[in-house]
Length: 119
Image 1 (tube, rainbow, N blue to C red):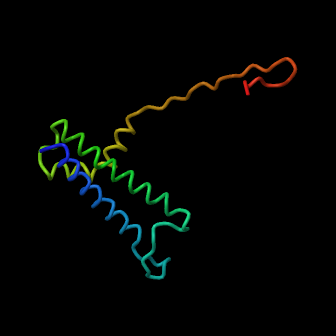
Image 2 (tube, rainbow, N blue to C red):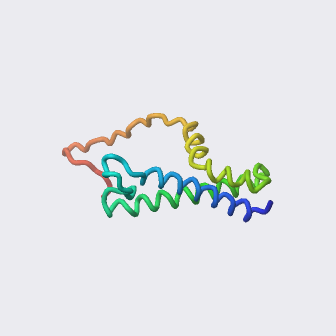
């Protein structure tokens, strides 16, 4: 399978996953009075939700393309699955990174009580 075909199947898979996620977030609840609602509370939140959906879709496309280029995804179904599972796979990859506390850098004070922050 070509790289572009793997990427397209990954895009389809991630778009399906995002559509299911959005429909679950929009389902009517007792709090909404049985009405479907958008997944943002305020219009100012809309760009954040849209950008998050686009980033996850691009991540699914990229992961499927990388899997196709590396020979892991040799069929359309495999590329589709990489697109669907991309957010989970990427989250698990980042869970493996250990973050350690960095010592805070002490800035020596000047004798006249002012800080020299090179500004």
